[in-house]
Length: 437
Image (cartoon, rainbow, N blue to C red; front, side):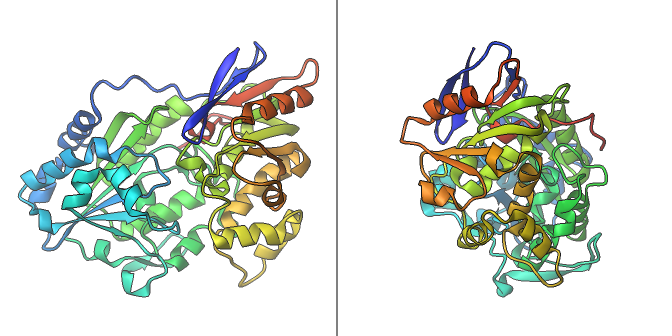
């Protein structure tokens, strides 16, 4: 059987054994354009009046529309002009609108990325700002405490806004159960100390902090409690298919609209595993998700329920932007080959390094299969860099990833062995058992 895997901005084609288990989302065909789906959702939302009705009772101040950063492949340009038109039709002057990019701890976007994400029309006509978690002047405290007892500081423009509208992508998330909804606020608009708490080692170590699960998920609870302290007035969540088309939009009140989106995604993209495989091959989701090795970790952690302990995990990703941020790359170099020592170190009082949470999630794969059975193939990272990343690295020449993947599968798949594949990487998140919440 021939299967196409997402890789960077292209695809990799693999010939696979006929009985290969293919894990892929099963989303319906969109029944309208992106703009039509979004407008339908905001005019008939879940749990609150329409967007226009909500705007009619807004407070004095800016209308802040929170949008995702470049790591999320939301096709904003296909619906944002119409959404902004709906806002202006409700009596909001264009000068009152601010598009606020929920970067969390990610880097700011470039002008070219903004044009590609939002379209020339929007970039030319609306104010756009990146959230900067480490800029103290950019932050404001909100009253109350999160579930963990932490004080919360968020983006000042969001806190002081006359109307808060958050947008996001709902997909399986390997820590928080699902992305979207409350995550646009925490960690998307949170301070560095809030992000550190959200990604603390105790939260990461909890097995309930995983794909497809919201019940007793400490990260979900922390994020939601922070969002409740400074709640949005309206939300919009979208769901995308493999072609990055919006297949469904869910708008309305923070919790009920997000819950409906999560239920939909769970049904379409979180199959329950009946028999773990001996070998798993996974994409990292294609660009922009596989732009860095940091993001590629989601792919090889998300597929773990489909793999038997001690099996072979073969992952690949574009990594066109390298390993990730300098702190993350330094962290990976420091603990290369010593992941058990890393886990012991982060449990010590006062120890915290930016991006350590991604290596901690990475160790879930190492605990299950070991470095020797965690293979990672890249045509952008050289052998010396791959050797720093606690994987068995395989550098590839451009256009040769398919050959290397095929050879790795042939070597790993013993007679009678079973193979499972994830052509869309973490956009399909298998579950060991039926989820709750």
